[in-house]
Image (cartoon, rainbow, N blue to C red; front, top):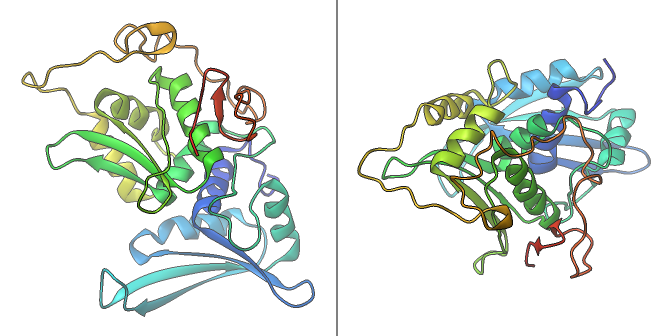
Length: 268
């Protein structure tokens, strides 16, 4: 198994996760490191990353005060091998600040596993206070937001336009109710590599049934058809392991990264 062959589901997931929560840093000479720091409750996924990486790496923990806790414990995975870092950088994990410039790989990749990695790292999977299921992603990257909209449209038929919010300039792409149920079943399949708590949340979402008291409002989909007329079963399914550069076309705005197709684009 070749390291970071993105047609392998586990590596596609890992790469999506690293693009969101990983940090590549350069040091003097050819030195440098990749670090990923997450809550200690999710550290099992870092053990899986260590298992998938054929280079020496380390896992450490620390406890510190944060805005949310006076004693937050996190686990840090560190990888220093130059060959591994060069491979990740070539695939699209930049050195330094990256949140606004990361984009889907330009090589073939396992798409639903990559998307699950994005959501596990910087997304949410759960229910609202009213008990409605949702799956969402927060990202500063126009290309990532556009790709998620494109992918979910191909997978479920649900249209979504998004723009940066005024408060912090990030995109918040959210899917609710039946679309969230379809996504949960599609992304979090049995034995998929994932954060255990989000996999469990996805299973609860997958079991959701709309209560009788909540009316279903049809949504306009592609070609003016309603959402109920265009279920994911009738939509053209995404081809597995297809590169990002293949299906979408750049919209007339000319930015080069914000297109889901020529009829709509993510507003900067």
